[in-house]
Image 1 (tube, helix red, strand yellow):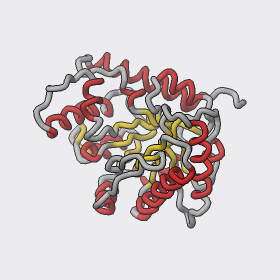
Image 2: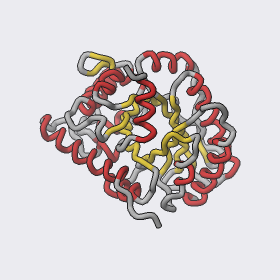
Image 3: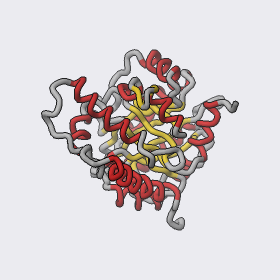
Length: 302
C-alpha cells in the first residue's frame, strides 16, 4: 500500500483542483450561519452554535459533488476536525472521498501595529499538531493580515509565519502560510510587491527538504506570484477570495498561473439550510465547477 502522506503530498503538489476553506472559527461562525439562512437567535449557547455549523459542514463534505476529483483538500476548524461525519472522524471521512484534510491553527489576530496584524500566541500548539497528525490531518493553515505597505511590518508578518511553519514541519505536517493583503488596503499593490520580496527572501533560508504552501490574496498585478509558485521550496500557491464574489474571484484567479483557489465565502455563498438535498448538491456543484475552472483553465499569459 502506498504511503498515505506521499499520496496526499503528490495530490497537493500537482493535482488539478482547489482547496475548500471550511474553517470559520468562533468569531465568524454567526455570520457564516446567517449567510446559510440560519438566523441569529437559533441557538442559545456556543455548543449549539457550533453544532449547527458542524451540521452545515458535514452536509457539504458528504454531498455527492464534493470529492477529490475537483476538491483537492479542505481546511477545517478544530471543532470540525474533532467531530464525526458518516460515523467516522471528519479527516477520515474527507480522505475516503479523496479530499486531503488540513487544520486551521491560528487563534486570531493581535491589534494592528505597523500596518499589519500578527497572529496571537498559540499555546499548546505542539499538542494540537500531534493530535491532528493522529487523526490523519496532512497540514495546517495560519492567517495574519496586511493593510499597509510597511516593509518592517510585512517582514515581521513573514518572519512569524515562517517561525510557526518550522514548528508545523517539525511535527510532520505541511504548513499553509496565509499572510493576507486586505483587498481594501489603500496600498495594496505596493504591499503585495513587498510581501513577494520578503517571502522569497525567507524561502531561501529553508534547509533540508523543508517545503511550505502559500495562501495569498489574488494580486492586483496578474502573475505577481508566479515566481513564488515555481520556487523549489513551495509545494503550492493558493488564493483566498478575500471578499470578492465567486465570479470575480474565479475570473481574477484565471489570470494567475500556478495559483489555485482556496475559497470560503465564494464557495458557500449560495448554499441555504432549507434547500432539499438535490438542490443543495446542485448548487454546491455549480460553485465547485466555477472555482475549479478558475483554478485549472488559465488565461493566456500576458
